[in-house]
Length: 558
Ligand code: ADP
Ligand code: MG
Image 1 (tube, rainbow, N blue to C red):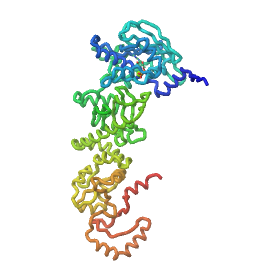
Image 2: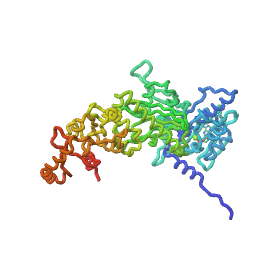
Image 3: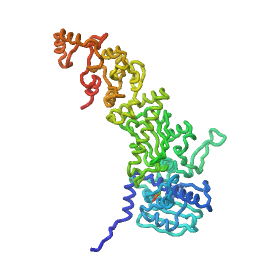
Image 4: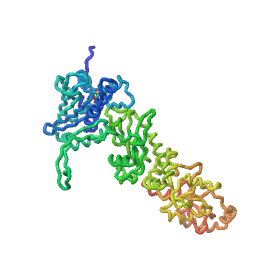
Protein backbone atom coordinates (compact mmCIF):
# COMPACT_ATOMS: atom_id res chain seq x y z
CA UNK A 1 0.00 0.00 0.00
CA UNK A 2 1.22 3.47 -0.78
CA UNK A 3 2.16 5.52 2.22
CA UNK A 4 0.23 8.70 2.64
CA UNK A 5 1.36 11.82 4.43
CA UNK A 6 -0.56 13.23 7.35
CA UNK A 7 -2.38 16.34 6.49
CA UNK A 8 -2.54 19.07 9.03
CA UNK A 9 -3.67 22.57 8.83
CA UNK A 10 -0.44 24.17 9.82
CA UNK A 11 -1.88 27.48 10.89
CA UNK A 12 -4.21 25.74 13.32
CA UNK A 13 -1.38 23.55 14.49
CA UNK A 14 0.79 26.56 15.19
CA UNK A 15 -1.99 28.25 17.10
CA UNK A 16 -2.60 25.13 19.12
CA UNK A 17 1.04 24.69 19.87
CA UNK A 18 1.62 28.27 20.94
CA UNK A 19 -1.49 28.50 23.03
CA UNK A 20 -0.89 25.24 24.79
CA UNK A 21 2.75 25.95 25.52
CA UNK A 22 2.32 29.32 27.14
CA UNK A 23 -0.09 30.11 29.91
CA UNK A 24 0.29 33.86 29.56
CA UNK A 25 0.31 35.99 26.44
CA UNK A 26 2.62 38.59 27.91
CA UNK A 27 5.63 36.28 27.67
CA UNK A 28 5.93 36.97 23.90
CA UNK A 29 7.93 40.05 24.90
CA UNK A 30 10.22 38.00 27.12
CA UNK A 31 10.85 35.64 24.20
CA UNK A 32 11.60 38.35 21.65
CA UNK A 33 13.84 40.26 24.04
CA UNK A 34 15.67 37.03 24.92
CA UNK A 35 16.28 36.44 21.21
CA UNK A 36 17.68 39.95 20.85
CA UNK A 37 19.91 39.43 23.84
CA UNK A 38 21.14 36.15 22.32
CA UNK A 39 21.83 37.97 19.04
CA UNK A 40 23.97 40.56 20.86
CA UNK A 41 25.74 37.81 22.80
CA UNK A 42 26.62 36.20 19.48
CA UNK A 43 28.07 39.35 18.00
CA UNK A 44 29.98 39.86 21.23
CA UNK A 45 31.34 36.37 20.99
CA UNK A 46 32.27 36.74 17.32
CA UNK A 47 34.16 39.89 18.08
CA UNK A 48 35.95 38.30 20.98
CA UNK A 49 37.30 35.63 18.72
CA UNK A 50 38.05 37.84 15.71
CA UNK A 51 40.79 40.45 16.07
CA UNK A 52 39.61 42.47 13.09
CA UNK A 53 36.38 43.37 14.86
CA UNK A 54 35.89 45.58 17.92
CA UNK A 55 33.05 45.53 20.39
CA UNK A 56 31.98 48.91 21.63
CA UNK A 57 29.53 48.28 24.42
CA UNK A 58 27.49 51.43 23.83
CA UNK A 59 26.52 50.27 20.35
CA UNK A 60 24.61 47.27 21.65
CA UNK A 61 21.10 47.60 22.89
CA UNK A 62 17.51 46.49 22.46
CA UNK A 63 14.78 48.98 21.73
CA UNK A 64 11.03 48.79 22.19
CA UNK A 65 8.74 51.18 20.30
CA UNK A 66 4.96 51.24 20.35
CA UNK A 67 2.85 53.00 17.73
CA UNK A 68 -0.69 52.98 19.09
CA UNK A 69 -2.33 54.59 16.07
CA UNK A 70 -1.12 51.90 13.72
CA UNK A 71 -1.17 49.15 16.35
CA UNK A 72 2.49 48.38 15.76
CA UNK A 73 5.01 47.18 18.31
CA UNK A 74 8.64 47.12 17.27
CA UNK A 75 11.45 45.24 19.00
CA UNK A 76 14.81 46.02 17.49
CA UNK A 77 18.35 45.05 18.32
CA UNK A 78 21.88 45.67 17.15
CA UNK A 79 22.75 41.99 17.38
CA UNK A 80 24.27 39.68 14.84
CA UNK A 81 21.31 39.72 12.45
CA UNK A 82 20.18 36.99 10.08
CA UNK A 83 21.11 36.22 6.48
CA UNK A 84 18.45 35.23 3.98
CA UNK A 85 19.22 31.57 4.66
CA UNK A 86 19.03 32.06 8.38
CA UNK A 87 15.69 33.82 8.14
CA UNK A 88 14.46 30.90 6.16
CA UNK A 89 15.96 28.20 8.36
CA UNK A 90 15.45 29.68 11.78
CA UNK A 91 12.15 31.45 11.40
CA UNK A 92 10.76 29.24 8.67
CA UNK A 93 11.22 26.02 10.60
CA UNK A 94 9.39 25.48 13.82
CA UNK A 95 11.49 23.94 16.55
CA UNK A 96 14.76 24.86 14.90
CA UNK A 97 17.01 26.85 17.17
CA UNK A 98 19.83 28.76 15.56
CA UNK A 99 20.98 29.67 19.05
CA UNK A 100 21.36 26.09 20.17
CA UNK A 101 23.35 25.36 17.00
CA UNK A 102 25.52 28.41 17.66
CA UNK A 103 26.21 27.27 21.19
CA UNK A 104 27.18 23.81 20.01
CA UNK A 105 29.28 24.96 17.07
CA UNK A 106 31.28 27.30 19.21
CA UNK A 107 31.34 25.00 22.19
CA UNK A 108 30.23 27.78 24.46
CA UNK A 109 30.14 26.86 28.07
CA UNK A 110 30.89 29.33 30.78
CA UNK A 111 29.84 32.91 30.83
CA UNK A 112 27.96 32.82 27.57
CA UNK A 113 24.52 32.09 28.73
CA UNK A 114 22.67 32.19 25.49
CA UNK A 115 19.03 31.72 26.33
CA UNK A 116 17.49 30.12 23.24
CA UNK A 117 17.38 26.39 22.71
CA UNK A 118 13.98 25.20 21.60
CA UNK A 119 13.28 27.16 18.47
CA UNK A 120 9.69 28.04 19.31
CA UNK A 121 9.90 31.26 21.34
CA UNK A 122 9.73 33.47 18.29
CA UNK A 123 6.32 32.12 17.32
CA UNK A 124 4.85 33.29 20.61
CA UNK A 125 4.59 36.64 18.82
CA UNK A 126 1.57 35.22 17.01
CA UNK A 127 -0.32 35.09 20.31
CA UNK A 128 -0.67 38.86 20.15
CA UNK A 129 0.02 39.71 16.51
CA UNK A 130 -1.75 39.00 13.21
CA UNK A 131 1.28 39.84 11.15
CA UNK A 132 4.92 39.57 12.10
CA UNK A 133 7.56 41.32 10.01
CA UNK A 134 11.26 40.74 10.52
CA UNK A 135 13.83 43.01 8.91
CA UNK A 136 17.37 41.86 9.36
CA UNK A 137 20.89 42.51 8.22
CA UNK A 138 23.53 39.99 9.18
CA UNK A 139 27.03 40.81 10.35
CA UNK A 140 29.36 40.87 7.35
CA UNK A 141 26.52 41.03 4.84
CA UNK A 142 25.70 43.84 2.39
CA UNK A 143 22.05 43.00 1.92
CA UNK A 144 19.13 43.16 4.21
CA UNK A 145 15.99 41.02 4.01
CA UNK A 146 12.40 41.23 5.04
CA UNK A 147 10.59 38.15 6.32
CA UNK A 148 6.85 38.38 6.80
CA UNK A 149 4.18 36.00 7.96
CA UNK A 150 0.62 35.88 9.18
CA UNK A 151 1.18 32.51 10.84
CA UNK A 152 2.19 29.10 9.70
CA UNK A 153 0.31 29.25 6.42
CA UNK A 154 3.52 30.60 5.06
CA UNK A 155 5.96 33.45 4.91
CA UNK A 156 7.58 35.61 2.30
CA UNK A 157 11.15 36.81 2.04
CA UNK A 158 12.32 39.72 -0.06
CA UNK A 159 15.31 42.05 -0.15
CA UNK A 160 14.90 45.38 1.59
CA UNK A 161 16.82 48.38 2.90
CA UNK A 162 18.44 48.49 6.31
CA UNK A 163 21.47 50.59 7.17
CA UNK A 164 22.95 48.87 10.18
CA UNK A 165 23.52 45.29 11.25
CA UNK A 166 20.78 43.90 13.46
CA UNK A 167 17.15 42.87 13.51
CA UNK A 168 13.79 44.60 13.74
CA UNK A 169 10.70 42.64 14.64
CA UNK A 170 7.47 44.46 13.90
CA UNK A 171 4.23 43.10 15.32
CA UNK A 172 0.85 44.12 14.05
CA UNK A 173 -1.02 43.81 17.32
CA UNK A 174 -4.38 42.01 17.12
CA UNK A 175 -7.66 43.86 17.41
CA UNK A 176 -9.49 43.39 20.70
CA UNK A 177 -11.98 40.58 20.75
CA UNK A 178 -14.99 40.16 22.97
CA UNK A 179 -13.09 38.36 25.68
CA UNK A 180 -9.54 39.43 25.07
CA UNK A 181 -7.94 42.84 25.00
CA UNK A 182 -4.70 43.37 23.15
CA UNK A 183 -4.49 47.14 23.57
CA UNK A 184 -2.38 46.70 26.66
CA UNK A 185 0.56 45.52 24.57
CA UNK A 186 0.77 49.01 23.12
CA UNK A 187 0.62 50.76 26.48
CA UNK A 188 3.83 52.21 27.80
CA UNK A 189 3.24 51.34 31.46
CA UNK A 190 2.24 47.78 30.62
CA UNK A 191 5.23 47.17 28.38
CA UNK A 192 7.48 48.62 31.02
CA UNK A 193 6.13 46.32 33.69
CA UNK A 194 6.43 43.22 31.48
CA UNK A 195 10.05 44.13 30.74
CA UNK A 196 10.74 44.67 34.44
CA UNK A 197 9.08 41.42 35.38
CA UNK A 198 10.82 39.04 33.01
CA UNK A 199 13.76 40.78 31.48
CA UNK A 200 15.10 43.06 34.18
CA UNK A 201 18.43 41.28 34.26
CA UNK A 202 19.09 41.02 30.54
CA UNK A 203 22.66 42.23 30.29
CA UNK A 204 22.13 44.76 27.53
CA UNK A 205 20.11 47.95 27.85
CA UNK A 206 16.45 47.71 26.88
CA UNK A 207 15.50 51.21 25.79
CA UNK A 208 12.07 52.69 25.48
CA UNK A 209 10.67 56.16 25.05
CA UNK A 210 8.66 57.09 28.10
CA UNK A 211 6.45 60.03 28.84
CA UNK A 212 5.81 61.59 32.20
CA UNK A 213 5.44 64.73 34.23
CA UNK A 214 8.05 66.16 36.50
CA UNK A 215 8.79 69.34 38.43
CA UNK A 216 10.37 71.98 36.26
CA UNK A 217 13.99 72.53 36.98
CA UNK A 218 14.52 75.20 39.57
CA UNK A 219 10.86 75.37 40.43
CA UNK A 220 8.83 73.62 43.07
CA UNK A 221 5.27 74.00 41.90
CA UNK A 222 5.65 74.15 38.14
CA UNK A 223 5.55 70.93 36.18
CA UNK A 224 6.49 69.94 32.67
CA UNK A 225 5.68 67.00 30.44
CA UNK A 226 8.63 65.10 29.16
CA UNK A 227 9.29 62.42 26.63
CA UNK A 228 12.61 60.70 26.77
CA UNK A 229 14.33 57.48 26.04
CA UNK A 230 15.10 55.50 29.16
CA UNK A 231 16.78 52.24 29.94
CA UNK A 232 14.08 50.11 31.54
CA UNK A 233 16.03 47.15 32.88
CA UNK A 234 18.53 47.09 35.74
CA UNK A 235 20.87 44.90 33.67
CA UNK A 236 23.32 43.76 36.30
CA UNK A 237 21.82 41.09 38.47
CA UNK A 238 22.89 41.75 42.02
CA UNK A 239 23.29 38.01 42.58
CA UNK A 240 26.06 37.85 40.00
CA UNK A 241 28.06 40.45 41.87
CA UNK A 242 30.70 39.63 44.38
CA UNK A 243 29.51 39.60 47.96
CA UNK A 244 32.36 41.90 48.92
CA UNK A 245 31.07 44.56 46.51
CA UNK A 246 27.66 44.64 48.13
CA UNK A 247 26.45 46.40 51.23
CA UNK A 248 23.55 45.56 53.52
CA UNK A 249 21.76 48.47 51.93
CA UNK A 250 22.10 46.93 48.46
CA UNK A 251 20.43 43.78 49.71
CA UNK A 252 17.69 45.74 51.44
CA UNK A 253 17.04 47.73 48.28
CA UNK A 254 16.75 44.58 46.25
CA UNK A 255 14.31 43.17 48.81
CA UNK A 256 12.14 46.23 48.54
CA UNK A 257 12.44 46.54 44.76
CA UNK A 258 11.33 42.97 44.32
CA UNK A 259 8.55 43.48 46.83
CA UNK A 260 9.47 40.39 48.78
CA UNK A 261 8.12 42.25 51.75
CA UNK A 262 7.40 45.71 53.02
CA UNK A 263 9.51 45.32 56.12
CA UNK A 264 13.27 45.29 56.31
CA UNK A 265 14.70 41.80 56.02
CA UNK A 266 16.10 40.40 59.26
CA UNK A 267 18.87 38.63 57.40
CA UNK A 268 20.03 38.02 53.85
CA UNK A 269 21.81 34.97 52.52
CA UNK A 270 23.82 35.27 49.31
CA UNK A 271 24.79 31.93 47.80
CA UNK A 272 27.05 31.26 44.84
CA UNK A 273 27.63 27.62 44.03
CA UNK A 274 29.96 26.58 41.28
CA UNK A 275 29.82 22.81 41.43
CA UNK A 276 28.11 20.20 39.33
CA UNK A 277 24.98 22.33 39.37
CA UNK A 278 25.83 26.01 39.25
CA UNK A 279 23.49 28.49 40.80
CA UNK A 280 23.26 31.83 42.54
CA UNK A 281 20.67 32.75 45.10
CA UNK A 282 19.72 35.65 47.30
CA UNK A 283 17.47 34.66 50.14
CA UNK A 284 15.90 36.67 52.90
CA UNK A 285 14.53 35.93 56.32
CA UNK A 286 11.83 38.55 56.83
CA UNK A 287 11.55 40.46 60.05
CA UNK A 288 7.77 40.29 60.31
CA UNK A 289 5.23 37.60 59.66
CA UNK A 290 3.50 38.31 56.34
CA UNK A 291 -0.12 39.16 57.07
CA UNK A 292 -1.39 36.04 55.31
CA UNK A 293 1.36 33.73 56.53
CA UNK A 294 -0.69 31.45 58.70
CA UNK A 295 -3.60 31.40 56.25
CA UNK A 296 -4.48 29.17 53.35
CA UNK A 297 -3.81 31.97 50.87
CA UNK A 298 -0.12 32.04 51.64
CA UNK A 299 1.99 30.53 48.88
CA UNK A 300 5.57 29.64 49.59
CA UNK A 301 8.26 29.72 46.94
CA UNK A 302 11.27 31.42 45.46
CA UNK A 303 11.60 33.19 42.15
CA UNK A 304 13.36 31.01 39.65
CA UNK A 305 15.55 32.47 36.91
CA UNK A 306 17.36 30.74 34.13
CA UNK A 307 20.34 32.77 32.94
CA UNK A 308 18.82 35.95 34.28
CA UNK A 309 15.38 35.45 32.70
CA UNK A 310 12.43 34.87 35.00
CA UNK A 311 10.97 31.39 34.57
CA UNK A 312 8.71 30.99 37.57
CA UNK A 313 7.46 33.52 40.08
CA UNK A 314 6.95 31.08 42.93
CA UNK A 315 8.82 27.85 42.71
CA UNK A 316 7.48 25.97 45.72
CA UNK A 317 9.77 22.98 45.32
CA UNK A 318 12.76 25.03 46.35
CA UNK A 319 11.66 25.35 49.98
CA UNK A 320 10.53 22.89 52.62
CA UNK A 321 7.31 23.94 54.34
CA UNK A 322 9.07 24.70 57.57
CA UNK A 323 11.20 27.32 55.80
CA UNK A 324 8.26 28.71 53.85
CA UNK A 325 8.88 32.17 55.31
CA UNK A 326 12.08 32.52 53.29
CA UNK A 327 11.84 34.93 50.34
CA UNK A 328 14.14 35.49 47.43
CA UNK A 329 15.39 34.15 44.14
CA UNK A 330 17.50 31.47 42.52
CA UNK A 331 19.25 31.79 39.17
CA UNK A 332 20.81 28.85 37.40
CA UNK A 333 22.14 28.17 33.93
CA UNK A 334 21.91 24.46 34.49
CA UNK A 335 18.18 23.86 34.62
CA UNK A 336 16.72 21.63 32.00
CA UNK A 337 13.72 23.63 31.06
CA UNK A 338 10.53 22.52 29.50
CA UNK A 339 9.83 23.95 26.08
CA UNK A 340 7.62 26.70 27.48
CA UNK A 341 10.37 27.72 29.90
CA UNK A 342 7.60 27.95 32.45
CA UNK A 343 8.12 24.54 33.92
CA UNK A 344 11.11 22.35 34.38
CA UNK A 345 11.70 19.25 32.36
CA UNK A 346 13.18 17.23 35.17
CA UNK A 347 13.80 18.13 38.72
CA UNK A 348 17.18 16.58 39.39
CA UNK A 349 18.97 19.92 39.39
CA UNK A 350 16.12 21.54 41.24
CA UNK A 351 16.21 18.89 43.95
CA UNK A 352 19.93 19.42 44.29
CA UNK A 353 19.49 23.17 44.63
CA UNK A 354 16.63 22.77 47.11
CA UNK A 355 18.69 20.49 49.31
CA UNK A 356 21.60 22.85 49.17
CA UNK A 357 19.45 25.84 50.04
CA UNK A 358 17.87 24.00 52.95
CA UNK A 359 21.19 23.35 54.62
CA UNK A 360 22.37 26.91 53.99
CA UNK A 361 19.28 28.34 55.67
CA UNK A 362 19.75 25.98 58.57
CA UNK A 363 23.37 26.97 58.96
CA UNK A 364 22.48 30.65 58.78
CA UNK A 365 19.85 30.29 61.49
CA UNK A 366 22.20 28.32 63.69
CA UNK A 367 24.79 31.03 63.25
CA UNK A 368 22.25 33.66 64.22
CA UNK A 369 21.27 31.66 67.28
CA UNK A 370 24.88 31.41 68.34
CA UNK A 371 26.07 34.89 67.54
CA UNK A 372 23.06 37.12 67.76
CA UNK A 373 20.63 35.67 70.25
CA UNK A 374 18.43 38.73 70.32
CA UNK A 375 17.92 38.63 66.58
CA UNK A 376 17.25 34.92 66.70
CA UNK A 377 14.62 35.36 69.37
CA UNK A 378 12.95 37.95 67.18
CA UNK A 379 12.99 35.49 64.33
CA UNK A 380 11.74 32.70 66.58
CA UNK A 381 8.93 34.82 67.83
CA UNK A 382 7.68 35.15 64.25
CA UNK A 383 8.47 31.79 62.75
CA UNK A 384 9.31 29.39 65.59
CA UNK A 385 5.84 27.96 65.36
CA UNK A 386 6.48 27.04 61.74
CA UNK A 387 9.63 25.17 62.71
CA UNK A 388 7.77 23.18 65.36
CA UNK A 389 5.03 22.52 62.91
CA UNK A 390 7.71 21.32 60.51
CA UNK A 391 9.01 18.74 62.97
CA UNK A 392 5.51 17.46 63.47
CA UNK A 393 4.20 17.36 59.90
CA UNK A 394 7.43 15.90 58.62
CA UNK A 395 7.12 12.98 61.07
CA UNK A 396 10.48 13.98 62.40
CA UNK A 397 12.12 13.23 59.05
CA UNK A 398 14.15 16.40 59.05
CA UNK A 399 14.72 16.43 62.75
CA UNK A 400 18.45 16.89 62.34
CA UNK A 401 17.72 20.12 60.45
CA UNK A 402 15.24 21.41 62.96
CA UNK A 403 15.88 20.13 66.47
CA UNK A 404 18.72 22.50 67.22
CA UNK A 405 16.67 25.46 66.09
CA UNK A 406 13.88 24.89 68.59
CA UNK A 407 13.48 26.86 71.79
CA UNK A 408 11.18 26.51 74.77
CA UNK A 409 10.63 28.54 77.91
CA UNK A 410 12.65 27.20 80.82
CA UNK A 411 11.51 27.01 84.47
CA UNK A 412 15.05 27.69 85.55
CA UNK A 413 16.29 30.31 83.15
CA UNK A 414 12.94 32.10 82.89
CA UNK A 415 13.53 32.57 79.16
CA UNK A 416 13.69 30.58 75.95
CA UNK A 417 16.37 27.91 75.88
CA UNK A 418 17.46 25.37 73.30
CA UNK A 419 17.35 21.63 73.82
CA UNK A 420 21.11 21.55 73.71
CA UNK A 421 21.31 24.08 76.51
CA UNK A 422 18.84 22.02 78.53
CA UNK A 423 20.66 18.74 78.06
CA UNK A 424 24.08 20.18 78.80
CA UNK A 425 22.78 21.42 82.17
CA UNK A 426 21.19 18.10 83.18
CA UNK A 427 22.55 16.52 86.37
CA UNK A 428 23.98 13.09 85.71
CA UNK A 429 21.21 11.13 87.40
CA UNK A 430 18.43 12.96 85.53
CA UNK A 431 16.95 10.55 83.04
CA UNK A 432 14.49 12.62 81.08
CA UNK A 433 13.90 16.02 79.55
CA UNK A 434 10.89 17.22 81.52
CA UNK A 435 8.17 19.41 80.16
CA UNK A 436 4.85 20.72 81.36
CA UNK A 437 1.96 21.87 79.21
CA UNK A 438 -0.49 24.64 79.89
CA UNK A 439 -2.00 27.82 78.59
CA UNK A 440 0.56 30.24 79.96
CA UNK A 441 3.86 30.10 81.78
CA UNK A 442 2.20 31.47 84.92
CA UNK A 443 -0.38 28.73 84.92
CA UNK A 444 2.17 26.02 84.37
CA UNK A 445 4.22 27.33 87.23
CA UNK A 446 1.30 26.65 89.56
CA UNK A 447 0.69 23.08 88.42
CA UNK A 448 0.99 20.59 91.29
CA UNK A 449 2.47 18.10 88.80
CA UNK A 450 5.63 20.18 88.51
CA UNK A 451 6.43 20.01 92.22
CA UNK A 452 8.46 16.84 92.50
CA UNK A 453 10.51 17.56 89.36
CA UNK A 454 11.17 21.11 90.45
CA UNK A 455 12.00 19.97 93.97
CA UNK A 456 14.60 17.65 92.57
CA UNK A 457 16.16 20.73 91.05
CA UNK A 458 15.40 19.62 87.51
CA UNK A 459 14.66 22.11 84.78
CA UNK A 460 11.21 21.99 83.16
CA UNK A 461 10.34 23.21 79.68
CA UNK A 462 7.01 24.99 79.47
CA UNK A 463 4.90 24.11 76.47
CA UNK A 464 2.30 26.80 75.86
CA UNK A 465 1.77 26.23 72.14
CA UNK A 466 -0.59 23.43 71.06
CA UNK A 467 1.97 22.21 68.60
CA UNK A 468 4.80 21.91 71.14
CA UNK A 469 4.01 18.53 72.55
CA UNK A 470 3.09 17.07 69.17
CA UNK A 471 6.41 18.24 67.79
CA UNK A 472 8.55 16.69 70.52
CA UNK A 473 6.56 13.46 70.25
CA UNK A 474 7.87 13.31 66.71
CA UNK A 475 11.39 14.02 67.85
CA UNK A 476 11.07 11.21 70.41
CA UNK A 477 14.33 12.17 72.02
CA UNK A 478 17.16 14.65 71.93
CA UNK A 479 20.75 13.50 72.35
CA UNK A 480 19.38 10.17 73.55
CA UNK A 481 17.32 11.78 76.28
CA UNK A 482 13.64 11.08 76.05
CA UNK A 483 11.02 13.70 76.72
CA UNK A 484 8.75 13.24 79.70
CA UNK A 485 5.64 15.11 80.66
CA UNK A 486 5.51 16.10 84.34
CA UNK A 487 1.96 14.80 84.38
CA UNK A 488 2.89 11.29 83.35
CA UNK A 489 2.37 8.54 85.91
CA UNK A 490 5.96 7.43 86.03
CA UNK A 491 8.37 10.30 86.21
CA UNK A 492 11.47 8.14 86.38
CA UNK A 493 12.42 9.76 89.63
CA UNK A 494 13.17 7.35 92.43
CA UNK A 495 10.45 7.74 94.95
CA UNK A 496 11.79 8.02 98.45
CA UNK A 497 10.03 5.17 100.12
CA UNK A 498 8.24 2.67 97.96
CA UNK A 499 7.16 0.41 100.81
CA UNK A 500 5.32 3.07 102.71
CA UNK A 501 3.52 3.94 99.51
CA UNK A 502 2.33 0.38 99.15
CA UNK A 503 1.26 0.03 102.75
CA UNK A 504 -0.41 3.43 102.69
CA UNK A 505 -2.23 2.39 99.56
CA UNK A 506 -3.56 -0.65 101.42
CA UNK A 507 -4.48 1.27 104.55
CA UNK A 508 -6.54 3.74 102.59
CA UNK A 509 -8.15 1.24 100.27
CA UNK A 510 -11.70 2.03 101.42
CA UNK A 511 -11.26 5.74 100.95
CA UNK A 512 -9.74 5.31 97.49
CA UNK A 513 -12.46 2.87 96.43
CA UNK A 514 -15.04 5.40 97.50
CA UNK A 515 -13.31 8.15 95.58
CA UNK A 516 -13.16 6.00 92.47
CA UNK A 517 -16.83 5.27 92.74
CA UNK A 518 -17.71 8.95 92.96
CA UNK A 519 -15.37 9.90 90.10
CA UNK A 520 -16.37 6.85 88.11
CA UNK A 521 -16.13 8.24 84.52
CA UNK A 522 -13.47 10.76 85.28
CA UNK A 523 -10.52 8.80 86.61
CA UNK A 524 -9.10 5.38 86.08
CA UNK A 525 -7.43 4.98 89.42
CA UNK A 526 -6.69 6.77 92.67
CA UNK A 527 -3.27 6.34 94.20
CA UNK A 528 -1.02 7.53 96.97
CA UNK A 529 1.72 9.73 95.57
CA UNK A 530 5.07 10.93 96.80
CA UNK A 531 5.41 13.59 94.16
CA UNK A 532 3.39 16.27 95.91
CA UNK A 533 4.80 18.75 98.39
CA UNK A 534 2.30 21.56 98.94
CA UNK A 535 -0.68 20.30 96.95
CA UNK A 536 -3.08 17.68 98.26
CA UNK A 537 -3.85 16.09 94.92
CA UNK A 538 -2.94 16.10 91.24
CA UNK A 539 -3.92 14.43 88.00
CA UNK A 540 -1.49 12.29 86.09
CA UNK A 541 -1.68 10.61 82.74
CA UNK A 542 -0.92 6.99 82.17
CA UNK A 543 -0.28 6.39 78.52
CA UNK A 544 1.67 8.41 76.02
CA UNK A 545 -0.74 11.25 75.85
CA UNK A 546 -0.56 14.06 78.30
CA UNK A 547 -3.70 15.64 79.62
CA UNK A 548 -3.10 18.72 77.46
CA UNK A 549 -2.63 16.62 74.37
CA UNK A 550 -5.84 14.78 75.02
CA UNK A 551 -7.58 18.13 75.27
CA UNK A 552 -6.26 19.23 71.87
CA UNK A 553 -7.20 15.93 70.27
CA UNK A 554 -10.66 16.03 71.80
CA UNK A 555 -11.17 19.54 70.48
CA UNK A 556 -10.33 18.49 66.93
CA UNK A 557 -13.27 17.90 64.61
CA UNK A 558 -13.57 14.22 63.74
P1 ADP B 1 15.28 29.83 20.36
O1 ADP B 1 15.49 31.21 20.85
O2 ADP B 1 14.86 28.88 21.41
O3 ADP B 1 16.42 29.33 19.55
P2 ADP B 1 13.27 31.09 18.79
O4 ADP B 1 12.04 30.56 18.11
O5 ADP B 1 13.04 32.11 19.81
O6 ADP B 1 14.04 29.86 19.37
O7 ADP B 1 14.23 31.65 17.69
C1 ADP B 1 14.64 30.81 16.62
C2 ADP B 1 15.97 31.26 16.05
O8 ADP B 1 15.82 32.45 15.26
C3 ADP B 1 17.00 31.64 17.06
O9 ADP B 1 17.67 30.49 17.54
C4 ADP B 1 17.92 32.55 16.28
O10 ADP B 1 18.84 31.82 15.53
C5 ADP B 1 16.97 33.24 15.35
N1 ADP B 1 16.57 34.58 15.83
C6 ADP B 1 15.40 34.90 16.43
N2 ADP B 1 15.38 36.20 16.76
C7 ADP B 1 16.55 36.73 16.37
C8 ADP B 1 17.16 38.05 16.44
N3 ADP B 1 16.53 39.09 17.00
N4 ADP B 1 18.40 38.20 15.92
C9 ADP B 1 19.05 37.16 15.38
N5 ADP B 1 18.56 35.92 15.28
C10 ADP B 1 17.33 35.70 15.77
MG1 MG C 1 14.17 32.38 21.71
